[in-house]
Length: 458
Image (cartoon, rainbow, N blue to C red; front, side):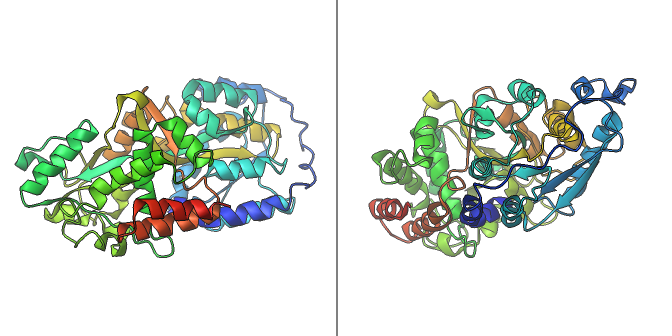
């Protein structure tokens, strides 16, 4: 799971790149950066919606490298989505996927050998890379596409000091609650629209003799991260995106009353003996239950709801029908207040360039279009991919949970925020935050938990 790997290497990346801020500038352009020749896509029907690429001329014989953490077998869909780019420009894409991407990218940048383009999975890492002076500002075509196809929140995550460096690529939604549609239907339970509705439903389910919630936060050295997601999701709903942003940047301390209020709200579910831990044990069992197994009691009717990201779809046993009328599905984690729109917690990648060669700018532009988003969706037959690109046609997404994610991301009221702990210093986001949330689940008080995390901030 790349989001966890990103957290573990955040401190390493910052340290490596921080030591190399005085690196020499990027190598000179090999083609002068200007367009030349007739655009190969001019007379091709399939290229008619990619006229922006005509700005870059004939790129036949040119090659652009892409470096990413997306490896086999998921990489094939990426490679297939670039075929139209080659058809319309003549250029070829050299794809390099690595499981060591997050650790190796800063090393390559420091050594003066950065890739043409890297898919950076975290805004904090993007800022660290920009600080080296090695990242190239996005061309005007990309900026225009980001304005057209993505919201201001996404543009901000790809920008540093109000300059756009990287367009969004893929996205994931964490603000989900998994459930069994048939269990709900058989018991006359309705999917809740508000937080109060969800708590009332929890009481109804508990009164029936079934524990309404099941959860697991064990994840090896990363144990505790699912609990941090709970706090982040609830804080967005109780205090709003501005307070959330200030908390992530430490302008609001960890032990601020607003953070305590949100954590207590989480505790109203996760530390409630009447609500958890369905089919597994008591409240403390949450800490020792693998996150991959946390929601499985739903299939046995031993619990009714499990808050976890869309990627949890891959953790259901083989043969499980994940659909609105299937064995399991998910609903949007309801809002607490109408004052903050529809908060969406999640993650994504950003197309970051270390060269302003024409062919590089052309691929950046292609990847920021609605055309690419739909090509990628159609070339991902197994599902498991979505984008916040508003030009993405949801029906092109394969799986029902991907389609639901797409609908949530395209909701005009959606207020997207990146996973907070992924943006915090490694000493906190990938260390004390995890550990103290685990201690909180096993009995530590809210005040002590937040004080301990606050004291760890570097």
